[in-house]
Length: 344
Image (cartoon, rainbow, N blue to C red; front, side):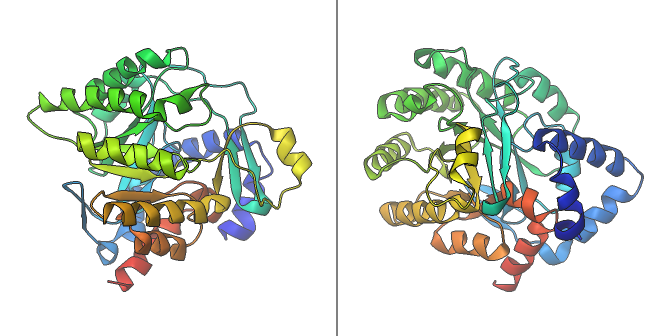
């Protein structure tokens, strides 16, 4: 029904407007007594309980929602009812910021893809913390953190550290986002020196705390092999707990969408099916380079349950969906969980 009825209707409207409308509908629907419980039983019942250890945390299943869908932690309880084993909020910055001018989110239906140049639009970490304090579900929460657009790169670590400090008591793990293509000059933070400095501050801060929470690094699919090796070197040296592979891409090769349409859309990060093979290839490469000793969350182009299985077979422990969730609908997590349980 989603593919043939609901999606065609939704795709007639601006994608960012649709996102906000879906958020409102979920909030209203799941506020009805008993609905949330029914959805939890249907989407995430005991038959789909498939616990797995990742970075010292036991996840109830392998399927999570990637950062970007619930930037401001407004839907944590509602999304938990749809069978996700974890939800990654953010990217969150210290101060609220509006992001880039609209339009900034575009569909490429022929490619089952999205292009976004949102620009870290979010309500700021303090507002996010207040919402997390009120959450009711026990779903595992990841905090994806970044810097404000106006913060120069040589001071970026201060922004990450502020978000890290404010979120520490309210999330289960952290993802350091230095690979978003929609923030000017942010790619420089992936250089070895910048990356080492930034992560060192977070690691030092964590040492002073009684409870150790995992720190993961989200990397770009556009890194070359030398850059991947540099990132892995820093991860090993600072004992970072894992990787999220991969972010959106600036590449546009092989798209079915007409080049004039792609050119008219302009800059932004591409996600969805065109990213699937590159993401899986990176997972396989990193697993081989590290002999599987660095845990990986695989994300990028999971449109079908077999895509998730492919990433796990390549070396990922967990997977995340976003664009596939939009194109395929709310049953995607359930279908992935069912396949993975059957393959146990």
